[in-house]
Length: 289
Image 1 (cartoon, one colour):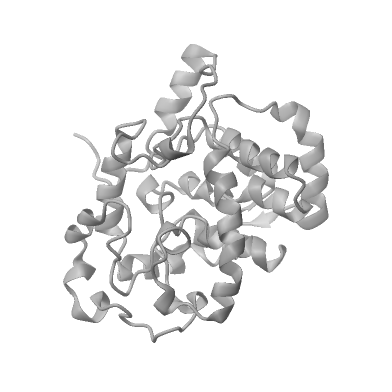
Image 2: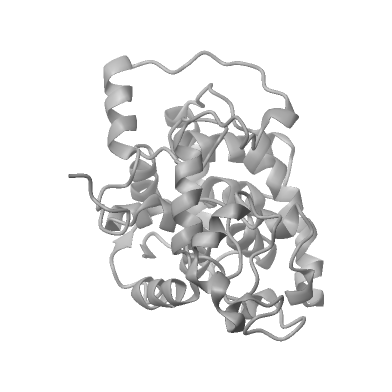
């Protein structure tokens, strides 16, 4: 009998990805990819993507998000350094990503190294390295639909510009008038800091790192998966002027997160000393997760 999505304690795809790696001991050869081929949800690279969003859109409700915030944002589960978190991500393949099936460590290194090559500030490079670190939620048995994927506000109308919008028909909030109007439980232009986003690694990591990084970096971390906002132009009615001021930073980060993906893995051992120094500059030796 297969476990239900709510009770499955395995991070979906992790065991399979690790077994494939052990069996093959090789990475796929690099292949050129045009920008228009990224985020191809009509023909995603892996069959898990559509099923992922079916579950995500059905279960990410106002009540669910409140429950998860209460459960995880006390940040009392464990103390862990960034390298320990990265070691875990080295076994994780994101089921929501239609572009590539390398582990998450390779994606983070590709993002950070591309930012570095373009000569950006060191905190920007660091943001590239750690922006998905919140996916350690999978360590605690969270299903991937509650960890990864595009994010969106809960407590108000689900925009039709959210990917696989049709699956929100199975979300109970869609039938609740209090939670399904354009502004829902919020007031117009209340500011995104006052809006509850669907639960996942973005919001979680923002709370882990909010005392340590510059505000543009924190916006990149908190909203980099909020494609309906920074790419589709939705939800401006919930934004205040400060959100609009920060939006260009999120948009500046997005191409590095998205278009740096390549089947060719960076050499982590060679790069590790540089990133070790960078981590020591901005972050404590242990973070509270």
